[in-house]
Image (cartoon, rainbow, N blue to C red; front, side, top):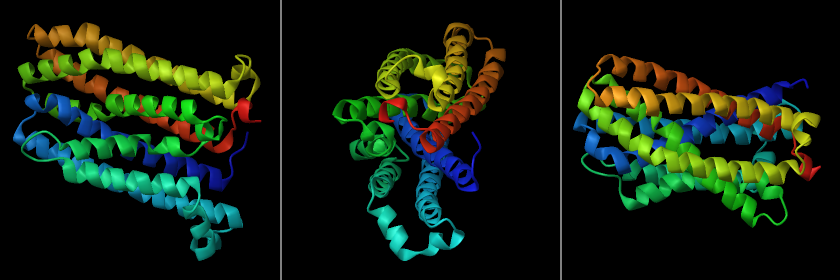
Length: 292
């Protein structure tokens, strides 16, 4: 399947928007349960990270609106057409972008430099992470209540997981073995349940979207899903390695494990970005068989 210039641009912008919103939300969640392991200077760095990722996601949402208007007109001039932009803003994508922006603003303002995030900041982070469920394939299923709920749970789990990578990298970068081991242990203990939930919700939603298991190899949508699942499998292997091998070494006082953890976090980040890019691709150029 060949991609048009509009499709390629939409995929790139969607990937950035996903990464910004989910990364910012996940960093806020990390501060909620891991603040005891973060120094004041590191908390300020994470706060700046939330601000930067939030701004990146809002800019990405704005670019998506312009690209949608341009694609509708078939030319770059459409990106400046007020009537087309207004039409996009009135659509589900426009409403989801507004919810995302409000949530990210609350998350940024609620991330405090001296203590845990405010409850309304955490609520804003959850709003931003689940905003993607307000439009797209899950929202198009009938009835849509269960699919949207499943996607919301899945998105919260993804934000928790991927959004914790940068804060964990910041802690590991300080070279404090005891704090790094404690933070990794706390994240790993919670991640077991969160990852189980996001996988269960994601697979249930995937079944609804595919309609039949043969659609995995018989449809373009299914083949993109296989690519995404392969990346998820790689991420799960890395997470298992961190929990079962690196975390015990950190607890045992092995300083070399800190460098291994930093390397693993970087690799997880790139694999996570690949998953977001695959998601952006299948939501842009391929429709699920259940909606055909």
